[in-house]
Image 1 (cartoon, helix red, strand yellow):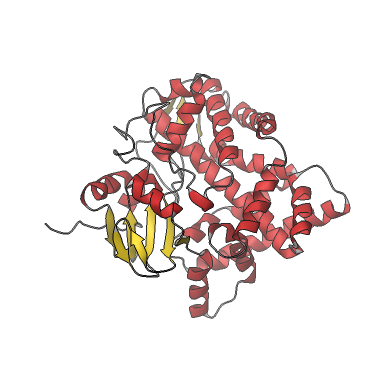
Image 2 (cartoon, one colour):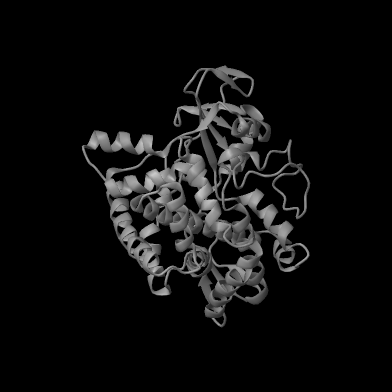
Length: 401
């Protein structure tokens, strides 16, 4: 049998429709050595589950790739490095648990349901601005600003700073790309300097005059854990970044799929099935494409003996459409059975804001389709941001019928 043809994860065809590549790999080579990644690509649900729960497959540190690039260039970007250090919750370094605990405690400073009125208010304000317009961009006018405004209000950031901080965090999810250019790192460092300066000032204000908001909560948690001022500023900025980009992509992807697939809008707008519809949309077109892991010793990967240092890319989006786990996996079925999906990862690195994001998406999507009436897409093609780790629409022009 001829070897299975591999895929280039940076190929525009792959970014446009990775699911057809995943379907072929699941059938022909579910434990696939990818020469572009220099790693194994896993596409079956059971294999992804095993690796994400495996005690000897650890999360790959973001710092390693970037540090190598900077060392070769002879550059130092200390502000960007502070952000990467704040991303410790994505790797397996000793500070991982402490960082996760801090961010979880911040999001959990109130019972989840108490955030619903805030989320609904942000959603309604954005929709109010769209009502009466014959067309708009569902990404830039709704999906992208919504989670930004929500997390800013949770943290207590003044509205006049929203745009400045959004510009400072925009595009930073490119840090997770396989290949990064020096010019990108330099630009991101400049963005971080702007954002850190804003957060630095807000933290100093809250130290002088505490409030009942997320920044004040994080100041208290930092004091408990011995986190210094610079690391605290970086973590607040990091929380804004991840709470904004991933949820905006989730909402935008869901709108696009709903407009392309009969029955989804009805399921979203029916309060009895909204939650189930959002869960199925997360399975079908979640934001995260993969989670990368490396073996910290000689071990086994999907039945294959592999040496220490072996890297495995667990393709979450592929596992979420595995027919072994979900019969007729490409079809939307609100309330379908089967194992939990991997839209928010799994194991000790599962998304800390999963419940928060679920609630946000339910409120946003229900109101969007209920209040704006019949909508249709006005572009046949789909444009995705040049991201390797995430699925995030660049735009989604729609017209109101």
